[in-house]
Image (cartoon, rainbow, N blue to C red):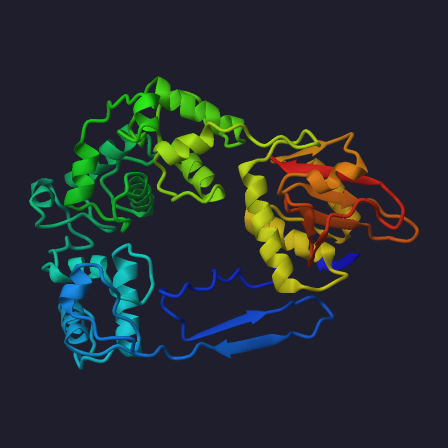
Length: 435
């Protein structure tokens, strides 16, 4: 199986589409995708339009405040008009006509995006709570704020573009909690990202700005040392800023599961991100904190495989992406294109060349992959997710074959199939696992 001129950065598919919305998610106006775009292929673009949602019922503001539903595209009434008026107050130029049309959808999406909400184009209890507030005074982009008192009193907030002593103090607090940035009094992209990471780690609305709640969390004492037993019983959670033997035990369990963290007993940003990755991979709410549910999952023994290859976080991610790519392509004869696309998207690693067998030598000298030898052909269906199997070329298969194991006896390349255990009678293969 071959690929013509597959070079680094040459993605054959557009970025993966998000998962289809559930019944309570906001519908998009349209959804387009491309089956495949390979040299010699005919570009096949398909488009389908989402139906306009029907008006299910007229929600009142009280319903919204009690979290009894959402305002969405197609709704109308006094509650919609109130939301439109509040959007006007927050600077969005829309008409308050009581009809939730495309103009209101765009304003709501912009409001959600600017204030760190999940962009759903719907207004629920959380959005209404913020819309109800008076709009905070914002420091000028080129100005400075010398005191944090206005932030403590909820009269102002720091944002990208702010400068001065107050910004320097925020940077000192962030750096003291382990977030990498330069203390220069300039609220630039580095500080914005550090603030966003801190907010995510501490369960605060992620908007990249320092308001009253974010400042209070930054200034709170950080010397909590919870015990594992209190976490098991649900009385406490481990989170960013914690330290001690319990944190060390969590880091040891993360390491055993293949998540690379320093075992230093300090719950810093790297540990929080490893916890989030573990939670996502195990279908737990990814909040970066360890409660009883996450702890119970961590304390399980990682599933052994007949091959002796341990699952890894990057392998799990690669398996998920490879399955999506394979389903979207659903072709035959382009295995290297599918796998190269998946590896690039999931791991940021480029594969190149015109034949699948060439990937073995590339992976062997690429950091972040470990080759596992002495794997029996019969054990290939038992590989953990993310293991890459590269088959050598033969007289009958001059380009070889490549695929990504899905961890369930299946493999993904440009389509999903049962894991191959021989290539037209030959068993010349190499196995690589993301570390």
